[in-house]
Length: 582
Image 1 (cartoon, rainbow, N blue to C red):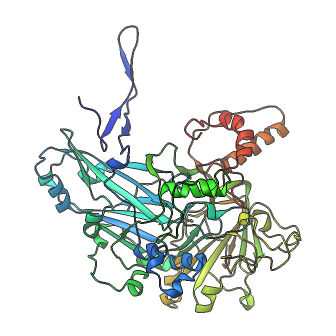
Image 2 (image 1 turned 45 degrees about the vertical axis):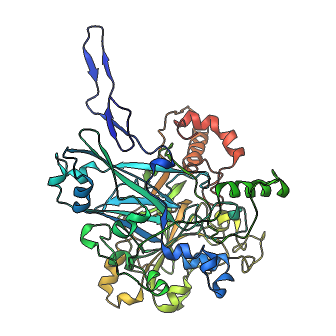
Image 3 (image 1 turned 30 degrees about the vertical axis):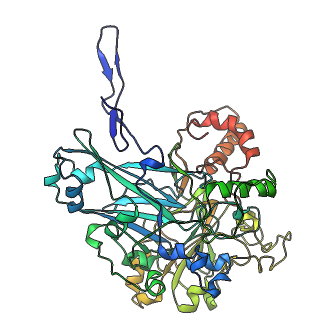
């Protein structure tokens, strides 16, 4: 009889009575949950890896660090972190002490910047989408999601606090997304205008009992951090929406099961900051996300840059800031379906380009990535160790690491038969390629933070690495490369994909088309094949440009452009249910 409380989960369905008063309803129940509505209902705070926060904290930097440019600081934050929390049987029993009712539901509410995926006891909870939360101005609002974890806590049977015996671990994988992107402050996008900070998460778990009591457990707050939460650098060395992903398969193999209770370890106190906290697989206590820049200060700075406010009209005092991370906006429930794989496409053709390079043609353009059902085969080194253009990786070659690269594109070079990387160059940064003369060769040699191994064109490229430290056991390397499945937190616009360098093409390769999971409603058909093809072309374009925002293109820009949206919105609303999207 009371108002719903945050953390409660409700089941519902509609029952209709006909003229004879006979009830009719669906067999299954639907579900909704109540989440926190404002900041006062969040016990959790934003937390981050101490080393990552350190790179935004100017006052704690040495004199040498103060002169490091943004790119060097960005590289100091690689590899990307993993967060985990221990929900022990003892903690659950203590929290529920005095409440002898049955546990009826458990709701985990969580968000992360730039992107995140969450699991419990090694079981993924998130959809396999690469962009979550949806792209907004993160200094104004950030969307969170709720996950029903009741079945994990109760083991699908009635349970009281005195009956709880099983402990659980919640794991969170995070990536840069639109938050801690590579600082390429040139080209088509003004990255310096986007809010930015170290990757960070916020979470709390609600336990509800049969009489309606709601308990908040393991929030990401200061007092709970040492007892419940840990963070470590993980297997994703780099993840960027424009330059792709670099994954260390050796670390992925070594850290298998990191989000299970069996892998939980207690943290050593008083560890050396630099020496240990940057190590991959070394668990430390997270730190709170901090900044001196308020939302009001940032809004005024953006207004001045947009010439919507004069400098003398600002109400906040302009000064040098001690911590330069952007403020994080209000947490709000997610208003849009997640980005999910909506279609699996098999290649029409596979071509041998020589030197161990294989070209996959999927017959139509899309936004997504390759998926390797059987993993990747062992790599080979091309003749004279001369890697095809765009497929080299100097850092790995110099120290003897093994690697395989995947490059994505929409079209082929007519003169060479391989992918035309210039037409899909991230933020338009390229050096002209073999036959494009709009930019001279070497045009990007002095572009700040331009990746060194992309031969002058900012390419859509994923790299899978097995370190030399694994040894020379070919069978072990083969087993580790077989762990590769797909990139985690980036998408690519493509019809074609090159895999390099292997003796044979990887088996069982498919392409996954990703977009926001709105329902497809409208359709069209006619007796004219040209008109039908035009309709399919527009449908493919929309399918490729709905990654939480309606973007201009799925490779060079990826940002929402108002002109396209205004022109396309009528046909988008014909084809899809855009009510939650718009």
